[in-house]
Image (cartoon, rainbow, N blue to C red; front, side, top):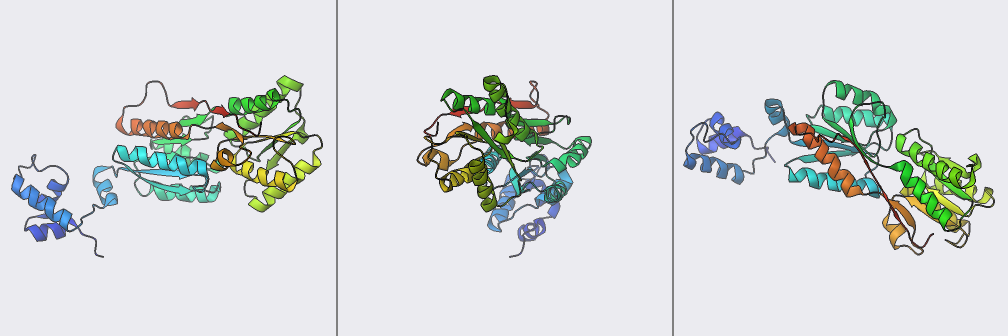
Length: 337
């Protein structure tokens, strides 16, 4: 189907393309275009199903009313819901959202960001990979509006919205300790990213306050790019090898799901043989039997705050309270503890 242009509308109505442009850009009154002609142009545009070229409009006005959203994995329930709320909040202010997944791959992330930057996005909400740091530094220098979500770079001065990962993990381990579990294992992602480092630090801190130490053999770090099958097998081996483990704390929901399968393979019953807490919720944790205790992230609040910060940067109405937001997660106690 042919794309309808303002030239097509002008030919249909019998006026100049300039007149059509003035009407479509809301300048009919300013340019003293009659109401009758304005209505004829608008009706013709609607009948021909005219859709403005946002890139061309962006070149003229400097704005496309489009935001770029880059997440880690859109199939992950956390990021899927985050994207949905970002899209909803942006739509309320007249913005559309183009989103992509990095799969935590630095090369792919850099390529996606390059593509979005050259598609005239007005602003960006990013869940960055470690290798995106240089790109984000360039965006800061270029004064591109950007907000980081879920993770950030402590030495980069940019806006971000994240949860209190340290205290969230700390409280999750405290819940297990309070319920009488003594030797707790940590299953986490082998990552230098700040959110994973903080969750591990919170785990270690809680054990040190209770027992005075956290043994290295109680921690399993799983490579991010490991397949689901291999991840289950690795957790299974960890459970079988570490004698005396009576509880597990998982730092992500996908590790938690893999962990439940590994526990079933090992013949461990929850919570009689093994207590379980997972950082971040999942429908499987809520609806399964037994249900799984979690550290729940306020995903809607995170997304809403991120969009508000970005729109504040775009409109020059930035929050005087600052743009480094750390939000508290909540402990949801269920049958697994």
